[in-house]
Length: 173
Image 1 (cartoon, rainbow, N blue to C red):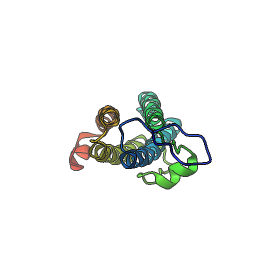
Image 2: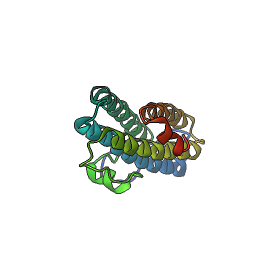
Image 3: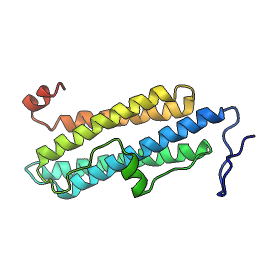
Image 4: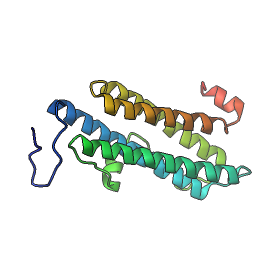
C-alpha cells in the first residue's frame, strides 16, 4: 500500500485508488474547502450586519445557510483525509485559495447583501459543477459533490427569491 512520504503522520491512501488521481482529488477538495469556507463566512457577515424591512427573516436565513455551508466544509475536509490527504482549512489557506471575491465588510443593506451573496453562490455552484466533472473517476467523492451542488443550488434559489423580480430577471434568473 502506498504511504504518503512526509515528516508528519498521514493516513494511507485508499486501496485501489491511483495515487495521482488521489492527489488531484485532494487538491480539488482543498480548493473547494477554501471557497466553501469563504462562502460560510460571507453568510455570517451578512447575518450579523443585515438591515432592512426583511431583517428578521434574512437574519435567520443567512445563519441557516452559514450552518449548512459549514457542514459542507466539514464533509469536504473529512473526504480529503479519508483519501489520505490533508485538509488545508486555515484562514490563510482560505484567503489564498478561494474562488470568491472579497466580501464587502461594511455592507448592511439587505438587497445589496442578497446580491453579493447570490453572486458568490453562483460562483460556488460553478466551482462545484467543475468539481463534479473532475471527480468522475472516484464515485464516493463525486457523490459528495453532487449532494453539495444540490444544497448550494437550493440556497441560490432561496436567495434569488428575495430579490425583486425585475432585478432578478435582468440577471437572467
